[in-house]
Image 1 (cartoon, rainbow, N blue to C red):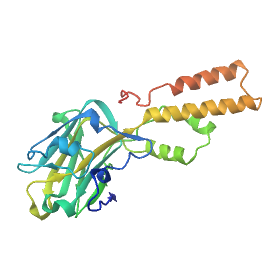
Image 2 (cartoon, helix red, strand yellow):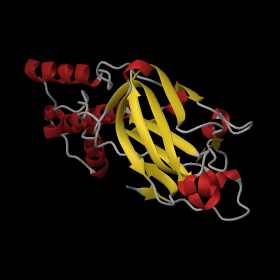
Image 3 (tube, one colour):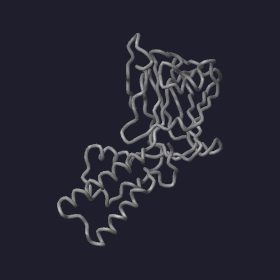
Length: 250
């Protein structure tokens, strides 16, 4: 279990509580969904949880388990989720067990992760071991990989393509237990990540253009019909959407 702690010194503004940027090659898509909760205290509902500042939080006001439902309007491919918990601030409101489920709707939700916590503090990555196979990236073919040298950033993107992918329209977070047998709960942040296919397409396209220009300068620019056809095919491949059968969300 990975804990990322971003401490806040006393007297700092909410800017100091802002979440870290998305990992390289990913984009945060939770703003594309409709959020609902099973219960909440006045002033501590969805708007507080959706706030970029972790100084605000959702506080439940009802029996356990407490539910958070994140409903997307289109099919999405999720490669990562992280939540923010802070035992130092929340004590008995801090979860000790959270279950995560996903599906196309409420009738077909399937549990994919159960996580237990002991005095957590910071951003925690949700376990994706129970999620399906990695999604194929149409912008990164074997032909492209063979003809382009990979720098450190490319290697990171390659590793992202091997991440398990959760295809769904609904994500449900179930908070089942709290520290010290607490009844209600606090959740201070939640982020959902998908691959940034557009960024990858732009990078691959830029590298292809640079490579072609270099060949022309060296007198190796493809003048034959065969070379021309090969170049056109690559350009067509680069224009294919990076989401496969899933529409690009922005």
